[in-house]
Length: 225
Image (cartoon, rainbow, N blue to C red; front, side, top):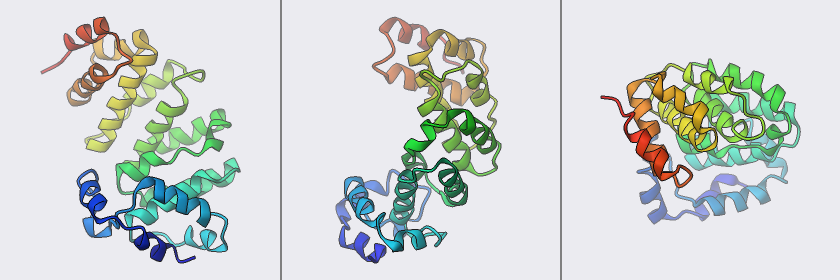
């Protein structure tokens, strides 16, 4: 199977025009225009082929959808160590939020103690989307049964001027407010986040249906200038 030919066969130019506005960090000429359900269906078929393993060695990929195919192939890996190894190879080449946020391999959730050490490593990276990915995993996997208050501080300690990192920090704290309101609230009351991220957290929390009207009213009083 020639994955690039298959991707162009699935091209939807109207979808490309719409989608390119959502990922302004990449060259629009690298976007083919393939809808996610079609991509995932293709990956399901492609993952069973010998070409898939070779494809994952061919970094960097020139097309956005090829990166998404790579991300979805990583999701199918069943061995934890192999999954981490492939993530470490791939993350330095991730250049947009959509590809970054699409990877949530199920095997990771079965190894949360070991994964935490890797997340700490990713948070210390100088790569924008590696840091964003680490924060995203803390949001996906460590805000429910595995939650510990110290994880809030881990995210607050991430210092960056990068929009896509700070947006993920805001998303993380807005989600934390929905699940651990009092503990997360202290980070706003004590102004532990930079002004932009602080206010963006409040905006996203106020937009959430999981935050009560009373909580939203109070959060609005905490906005900073």
